[in-house]
Length: 224
Image 1: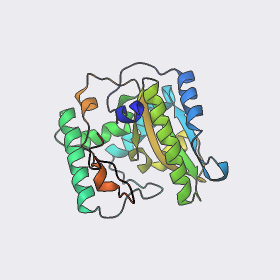
Image 2: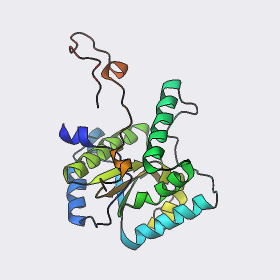
Image 3: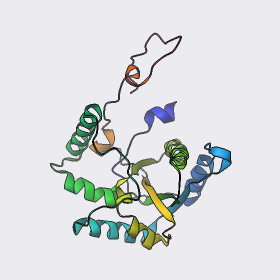
């Protein structure tokens, strides 16, 4: 419960290397996530050192050129409902304020440099992946993020880097038979950075849970 409650997206990192053996332990434990018929469809590229710098430089260069993003799949509806749109506005406003920025461009650019994290994980699936495999990869990814918290590390899941899937496939030697699901910035968080203290407000339990039968006394208690 403590790991769940303390996990949040970290967008500033210390210049401190992450032990590869520690990452291996977290990834091995995360693979205990459930999957249909034990298929375990997720695949992960662990990107560090010169390869990490080369990948970030290529992604940032595409952004600076104004290259349109072409992700391999759609991660949200064409038009957010009013509640989701309001939450998105509040969240980006809070992040920008915490980072001392007045526009999203610098923020988006830093996103493609993995916010300075020393490690970037790239998750990918087969090109014919059914929707259920995305669900199962989500189980795995959440395990990774909670495992990182327990190991004293921070992370930030990133759909943004999947906007340039061709660059990722080229740099990491992946074929056209793989689709890029997302990235995950990983490192030791800089807790002195204001952005790492920002938490967007979360819905209270009653906004997303319906109880059929017995209900708790505090069903509308905020989740934190």
